[in-house]
Amino acid sequence: MNTERLRARSQFCAVTARAALFLGGFLAPGLATLAQDSTPGPVAPPPEHRVTRSIGTEPEPEAPPSLPPEEIIWHFSQKEDEYLIARSRHTFRKSIRLQEFGPDGKLSGEFFRVTETAPRPDGRPLVKVIEKPQSTLQHAFLAPEDLEALERVPAYPLTTSQLPKYNLKYIGKEQVDEIDCYIFQVKPKMLERTHGLFDGVIWVDAKYLEVVKTYGKWVTEQGDAPILTQYPFALFETYRENVGGKYWFPNYARSDDTLHLKDQDLNIRLVIRWSDFKPLPSASPTAAPTPSSPAKP
Figure (tube, rainbow, N blue to C red):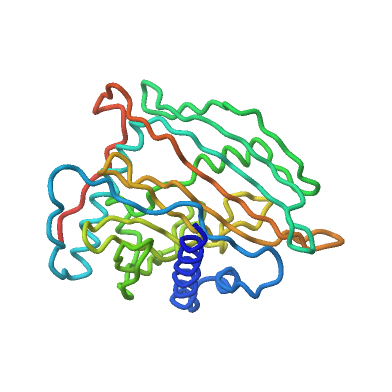
């Protein structure tokens, strides 16, 4: 167990450090800060998960040949459309944990809430609290509007309908939990005033051409667009889980930052987890969003 944790931590730090190097030219300095264990404050542990793929009775196909970046982008955007629809036909649980850390780096308080999401007949999500919120926070808190804002964050920013808004640049290869991945830098072509666009890096499974991890922030014409207006959380690292052997759904997202109070700087962390994905017994094809598909490059 200790060997696996050390190995996972080594992979986590290596991937995050390299991402910080790639992003250094256009993301906020906070990204580099998150990638260094020497930064004062709480040390970031590796996520308690592994990215795995369910293997059926049929042998896995051979890895696809090397493709032009445009072809890779086209393939994974098509799958983003598929996963967006598939996710809307699943129920799942979501936990939100906001943590405060004292000057010694130790946990000093936290808020925790668990909900269950299921689609309504009209396709809109129905969110039900299944575990009463608990809080020992001393300085921060999450208002109802903050919790609603977290529900509105797009799970798939690079669907085919959104892809024309971005410039994507291939920047190398790297492993994420033993999965060989292509890495793409993502940058908006033109910022919008009220609608946030993703600015960051994505990791694409080199064999199956699907996104397994994202790291970045949302930006507008006004600058960074933190998801929660009263907190500085902007950069989020999000891992995905393979569900049913064919869909990649977000299952872990985290952001670390500093809240500047009148008399102190408070280290805070936001962790979001999605779990217990279950397909609906039956789903109408019209009950889910249907993104438009652009012409293949």
